[in-house]
Image 1 (cartoon, one colour):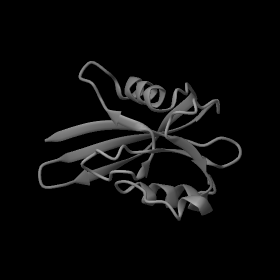
Image 2: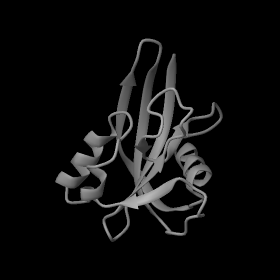
Image 3: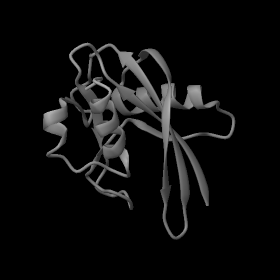
Length: 129
């Protein structure tokens, strides 16, 4: 099954990145941290998907964003392509969300979902984190 997703790499001037904790009932990477994002609905563009998913998972509105990269995840039954955008948002988080901002040094101690640690390393090497 092919799954198309869109996610946001949200970094503001303090060079901390926003990650969300995946629910414990997820089949893949339960309780791991990832970029906010999710599946594209049939009627949506990828831009619309990333805006909607960030809002659903963090209550944040993206201030600005642009396409950055993509990752692939392959399992026995699934091929997933995750389009990643890099952007900024206002840091007003609703307390009940599982979203937190982390520095690069803090991220190294977290369990990161999918292959997103590779993207985090790339961001660090580009001096964005």
